[in-house]
Image 1: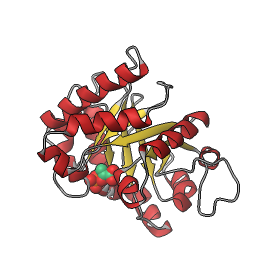
Image 2 (image 1 turned 45 degrees about the vertical axis):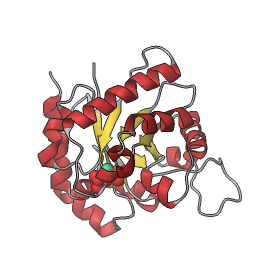
Image 3 (image 1 turned 90 degrees about the vertical axis):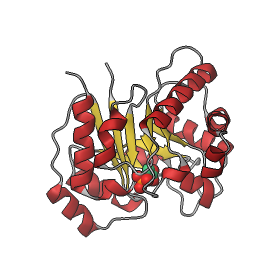
Image 4 (image 1 turned 120 degrees about the horizontal axis):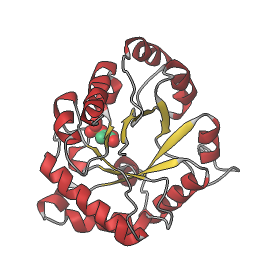
Length: 246
Ligand code: PEP
């Protein structure tokens, strides 16, 4: 039985007032095979959980350290303590702007799994790589560089860098082809038929959601900009729900 995952990434946006406004407008009827989560900035995780009880909680990043003299860091134990279920790891904005390497991302991934939470490993090629036709090779290299030996408790988000926050959504064919490549590579790396869910991210909006959820290899979406608007995010969630056969 397939489960779909829809995760909103609020990045560095939000306030107590915007969470209250979001919650007062948020209208969505859940489904047992659809997990909807939001990753707000760290300070708002608890507030969001209280305001949106039918939404799961996610974090945008984590530390590799359990505790100690690491100013500014947030551990996976703390994230579990405040009710997070998912942690984004290796988002392209962290790779590009914070110099995160595959090696560091792999350590974060292992830390998240060890705490009993589910990492969402983000991978995706930049525009030059796509133009050169090297996207499959680049994404396989990111997977090989970061994946742990543990197949369970893992989601992967395919997020082509050229589609993030640009309004350029990858076509359903481009997405489905890459998701098939990712699933095959994960099975080759982890062995067997691990059936790791693969989400798509990159300028998903209500108008593009239905076609994306209709792709056979798409198991959900990671949504940035459109997740800040409760009506848009709920419309994307409804598309996901409608794509689930009863
Ligand atoms: C993201 O930040 O993960 C993302 C997919 O952003 P957007 O939907 O705005 O492209």
